[in-house]
Image (cartoon, rainbow, N blue to C red; front, side):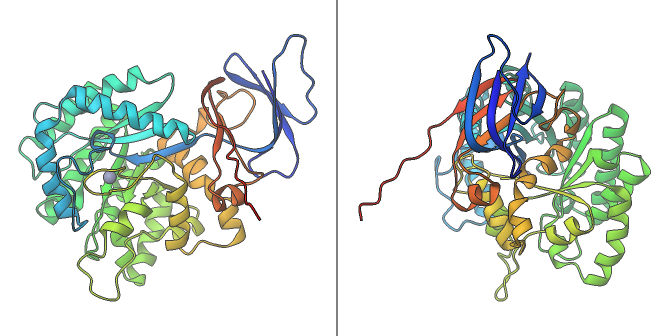
Length: 411
Ligand SMILES: [Zn+2]
């Protein structure tokens, strides 16, 4: 198949892409169709590498209002609502909702998802279900699974064993939640345990790290230190790190040196954290987001995720990462021309580094043919006008398509 006339990643020159056997075989301008080769004219639209959801909890999605709505919008009322929803949780319920949300994602150009699955459940039912879904959906969506200890590793009965069992079952990444552990000592020990478990089993790491407005929450330094000492480096990700918003600048200066040495990745979740953080502040109210601008300027890798889609903690979400990027740029004050133009990287190339899939990802000859086509010429326009994803091709196969919206103004 020859795809003609595309602006690849904001290029001002039109290019063509040849896809054979599920891979890109040639990318250049003025490619001629071979005898019998099918041609698709993209008509001067934007082509990007596929979007990536680098942080979500699929097992909780699409449960908002079932059976009760979170009226205050707080984290704690969210937990209370979830307790009421939990009795209905079973394999069939999770599979039905995940199948729906994965299709919502696909329609919006997402082809890879990292999901955190709660393993503070003695039956590990959600983990088992998600491992089955990873296999069932693999032709349409790549799913990476994090063993996520929602109630802590040291602070939950048998927490270490549940984490070990989840890794044995087939989790791709090891999680942790240091700011939620009962004590500072438990926090450090849980991180030592989690990173050792990953190192011993050749797994990735993604920690819910310091998702709190407490400036004394300093799990991140332990994560970075262990990533460096164990040689895990960019196999490790710190999600949220919202406490960094409140760190004093002298501490931040010291920490930044370690972060750069450790080369770990960061995930910010602008929608959910601006919604949930700052709840105990009066005024001024903190924005609840990590220092994306400063981390990026220091060469550290940051990607953006949803965290929640239409669940007790976040009542919105349609599976489009557009709003994540749009709000993310506002709250981090990254609204320069280049910042806006390149912001698709937060949900594509940067996210590929977070998921550690960069070797098989990107629009390059020899790599799997994954790309999306947007109804715009560049990402600035696509973001500003909320352009549709017209086509999503994964391993050379079309997995979603849409028609460009037609509007008529009658004056
Ligand atoms: Zn999360």
